[in-house]
Length: 101
Image (cartoon, rainbow, N blue to C red; front, side):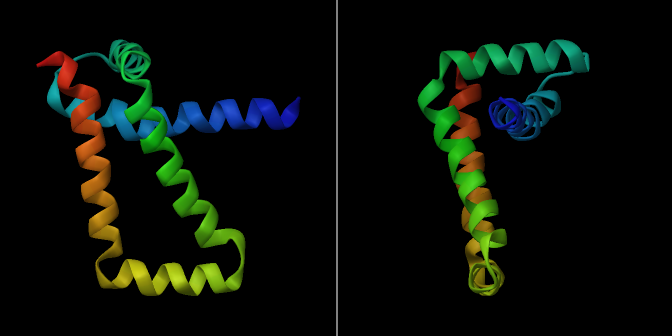
């Protein structure tokens, strides 16, 4: 049960970091309301939300899983991988927030 709680808390943390901060930048709103609205947006766009969360979890897991993954991640992210990941995150977040426009 502790692992389940950790997974739920981690997913909520990714949601707050990835979507809520972008929402706060776009709309001047209180933080509590922005987080609540972010959760509502994520519920309305579950596919994009899950893809966004899993991509970022896999990148972190691959980077810290072993020494080979760490050095591969350093090499890949040094030569354009981080900008590709940021672009993909921005594109997915744009689709999640497209409901508000």
